[in-house]
Image (cartoon, rainbow, N blue to C red; front, side, top):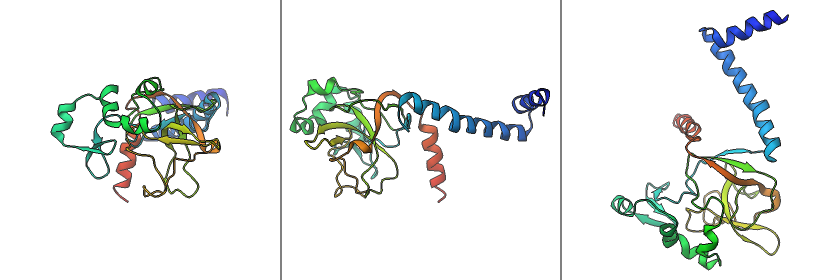
Length: 224
């Protein structure tokens, strides 16, 4: 195969209206993203998961529906009318609802206001993850669940305490309490997270970009 053959093939892939050219183009894009783009990002950002799609509302500062179709924020349940009346939730409103838990952990509103991504993020956002850092209180980290957890994917929550043994505690901003082995179906524990479990920390959020993946996953699951 000479250069002219390659040039003709390349032109056919990107300019032909053939269904086969579309299939070949999709395969090329998939291979480039999986084996070139993502490995390059992993190298640059220093972790195995440089881009993470948010698939739950555990870091959402809004009143949103939970798995039981209830409108909630930090374990408080609201009606549709109450949600409309409250409207946009800024830090002051969020703290009025959720701040008590943090106060019990000796985290003040002023401290919280200086944390990264203070307003959390929403289901469907994509998070850029940095791997070269020393964890501190307020960081939002992505970590692998404990070995006996059945959670299907890494978790992204905020560090709220560093234990004396050097492990970390986290909590989802939207959640009313921390996950322990006894209070969730996956038996996930976020009160003793080791350094080895940590993949990286969230540094930037890109709103809504993760929704196509969520829609596709939910579509596939509907037929299982």
